[in-house]
Structures are given as C-alpha cells and as structure tokens.
Length: 311
Length: 311
Image 1: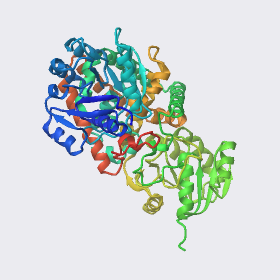
Image 2 (image 1 turned 30 degrees about the horizontal axis):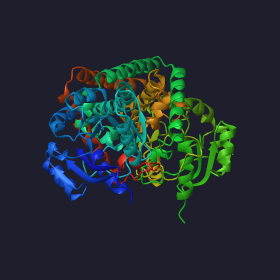
Image 3 (image 1 turned 45 degrees about the vertical axis):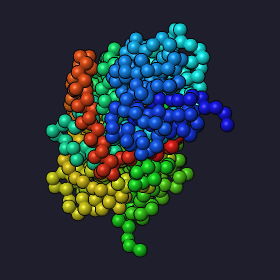
C-alpha cells in the first residue's frame, strides 16, 4: 500500500462539505489521521456517532496541532476568527486551505493572521446540495465537479501541486484562477441564482390574494424548482452576500435591467422580443446537458412523481 | 366491459399535453375513438407513427365532426382561430374544453364564437415537463397533479360532472375556481417562475466578463436549476405572457420590490434581514415535500450525477 497523501488532516467545521471530505478521504485513504473540529457540541457528537474522523476537538487550536493539511470548512464569515485562533498552533510547512464560495474576502480575512511558515492557498469545491450538517455529506459529492484554487503570487509550487493532487483524489477536476475572477464567476452561476430563488419564494410567501396552500398545490408548474436553492443553509448564504457584495450587486443590477426590458415587452405586447429571448435560453440547457453537468430527464428526473417521468 | 366515458374525443393540437391525453385515454379506455388534429403535417405524421389516435386530420373542422368531447391543446394564442374554425362543425351537446395556462383570456377569445348548443368549460391540467411535441407526452403526466376547471355561471352541471370524471380518470385531482383567480394563482406559481428563469439565463448569456464555458462548467452551483424552466416551449410562453398580462405585471412588480429590498440589505450589510429571509423560505420547501409535490432527494435526485446523491 502506498503512503497516504497527508499524515494528519484537520477539518475545521464538519457540515456538508467537511463531512463529505471526511468520507472521501477515508474511502480513498488520503490521510493517516482525520481530525475533526467544530464549535458545536451537538455537531461534534454527531460526527463521532457517524465515525467521520479519528480525533475530535471543540477547540480548533488543538485540532490543527501537528496537521500537515488544515481545511477551513466553516461558513465564510467565521474564517477570520478561526484563522486567529489556529495561527499560533499551526505546524511549520502545513498547507492551509478553505472551501468557501467567496475567495477575495476570505484571503483578506485569513492571510494576515497566518504565519509565513505555512502555505495558505484558498480554494472552493463547486459542489453541494441544499442540505447541511454532518449527516448531509457523502463521499462522491466532488465527482464530476470542479474545484477552483486561487493561489497568489509567491505560492509554493510544491504545496500547490500537493493540494491539486488532494482534490483530484477526491474526484474533482481542479482549475486555478485569480480570486477576483472566481468571485465574479460565482456571483453569476451561484450567488445570483440563490438570491433570486430566495427572493421569489419570499414574494410568493407574502401574497394575500393567493393562499399558501394554493402555492403548494400548484407548485409543480414551476415554483417548486426555486424552493430547492431557497432551502439552502441561511448562515452560509448570509455570509456569501456580505462577503461578495460588489460582484453580487453588479450581477443584480444587470438582472434587474434585463427584467425591466422583459417587463416592458410584456406590457407592450411585444411577442417577437419574448419569443426571441425564450428561444435563445433554450440552447444553454442543451449545452449543459451535453457537458454532462445536467440530467436530460424531464423534470430533473425527480423520483417522487407518481408518474413515470421517462418519455 | 363498461362503456367508455366518451364516444369520440377530438384533440386539437398534439404536443406534450395532447399526446399525454391520447396515451392515458387509450390506457384507461376513456374514448371509443380518438381523433387527432394539428396544422403541422410533420407533427401529424409523427402522431400517426406513434399510433396516438384512430383518425388524423390537418383540418380541425373535420376532426370535431361527431365528437362529444373536443379538447383544444394548442398554445393559448391559437385558441380563437381554432374556435372560429370548428364552431360550425361542432355536434349539438358536445363538451368543448381547453388546457391553457391562462383562463380569462381564453374564455374571452373562444366563447363568443361557439354555438350555444355546446358546453364550453375552460380547464387547465397543472402538469408538464420542459419538453414539447408528440414524443414528449406520457400516460402518467397527470397523476398526483391538479386539474383546474373554471366553469362560468349557467354551466350545465351534467356536462361539468362528466368533464370532472374525465380528468379524474386521467389521474388528476380536479378543482374548480373563478377564471380570474386561476390566472392570479398561476401567475405566481408558474408564470413568474418561468419569466424569472428565462431572464436569469438571458443575463448570464450576455456577460462579457464571464465566459459561456465558465457558466456551463460551474452551473451545478445553482444556475442549472433555472435552465430547465428556461428551456420550455417559446411559443407557449410567449402566448402566456401576452394573455395574462395584468396578473403577471402585478407579480413582477412585487418581485422587483422585494428584490430591491434584498439588494439594499446586501449593499448595507444587513445580515439579520438576509438571515431572516433565508430562514423563512426554507420552511416552504419542507411543506412542498410533505404535501407530496416535491422530491426530498438532494439535488432533486438528479440521476446523471457521477456521485450517489443519496445521503
């Protein structure tokens, strides 16, 4: 048996991403020891019941001692506090990374606190579900998904190479890009969709002319698709909104401009404009499916339909 | 064997809904004869190849002769023209209905042209997928789904009862309501979600700072959920927008107001407001799942994921 990639990996935070990493690391034998840390006693207890790691700590500073890889798996807003706490306890030469959906703000919050003897490389596995917590993770979460690393100038090539190998071993295809570009890309493919979904579900919830039971009964006609994103972890998404403000506001401005034009086309009965937009958007889904990023099955292939969704 | 519910059912239009009706009628033996009509020669030929009916006509006037049930399954915008064309050829006592996502405008467009000797009852099976055409239909489309009928004052109770029985035999749970209320409910649960989905996919398609290949690669982080609705039939959705203008503009105004408030919370770093909204919307999905209207499986239970989406 070959040596594992890392001796001692500390996961700070054991939600959907952290617990998926614990599971895939075990399956792929990527670490000799898996150390788990979370501030919540109940969550730590649950991680122990699930046997996700080898050692468990409420104190992140204890968890990182002797670790050659430390992964911050907390909501983005907690990263600075964790960095301050673990900094004096990190081993020389350790690689420190994170999994947040925002990169520039995390780098600004974390890096100044870390000793120069460790390698900090920010990262983001672009994968997830609408569920959260240690029970929600699964070993194959990262397969067929991208992981974006945003190394800065001066990053050790050896450390970067090792971290790339780690994510590849988890099943990811790894890409590198500048943190600012990451934040712009994610603002459009992830942050804007979540914000719009939260907003439309809130709008429907507020109506006085249509009852909530009507919204639920007839939701299969479109609304229910939005409820999945709108049921994602509130803490995580609050932190994303607060920490990628500029890119999100830019995307929201574009979205609102486009929506005003669409609204105008509806008001003035401009059928050609509507038809042209509705035709253009159809092609994008086709490309997603061809790229293996989406299911071609009708209604996403939902399995709870009474009917058989197969054509 | 009991007598079928209808002797001769004419389907005018043989897309997703029409072809699903043909299939379920055959399976449940709801009609002695199924007559299929569509203006497109290619579509009619395809319906024949699929053996969806017993007789096939390009001319809707011929198709309705002798029918005791006539179902308009065309896009909403085509209903008036079809009504004019078939009116002189309808049998006395025939039930005429439709399946459009808009009710008040369809009633206004169709009813004035029909003879008083037929029973016109507008309807809407709230069911569908993002696919269209005669190949997209399947017999179980209407199961576990609602069908809304919007009978007006003076509607024959016997005709209404027979139409209710028909939809129940197709697997639907039937409800009745006023056409204007239907249009308001559907504006929020169906029309607004489709318009928002078309809009966000259009916005992403227009960016110059993020490439289309990046949008596709990272779409699993949220964006891809919107592409399903945004790949729905452009003609159908153009007609819905043009024919339910007032209710749609009202819902768009509310949505935009709410989005402005959300945007402001992001700009001013109001984390509490964000957290409260993101928490409130979570509950709605739970209710959808409990009502059997949605799958609890992560990521809708999509089947093309490399990973196992089970928890």
